[in-house]
Length: 131
Image (cartoon, rainbow, N blue to C red):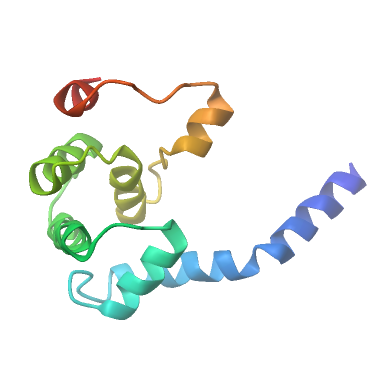
């Protein structure tokens, strides 16, 4: 067991920068307008590896700011809004936004699916959302 603790501590030391980015993101969400704050967006994009064009990112962060002001935002709402504004079904980024707004919510991405033994959906657009 001591060896497991040592490995966990070594892993944390290697991830200290990632942890700091996460802490910065979670701290800034409540303090800044995420649709306009380029420093927040840059850190968020870096941490969550957002590799989309400027138009997509603007829709994303506009929705993010809108969701901050809503009560009981759901994964489905974010997913539908992203799809209607960008034409893309982005379950991973929808879950990252929701988890940033509510730290009790999980992130849903290919790494999580892989560890759970679940294959990503092959369905398209609205079928994928419904699924």
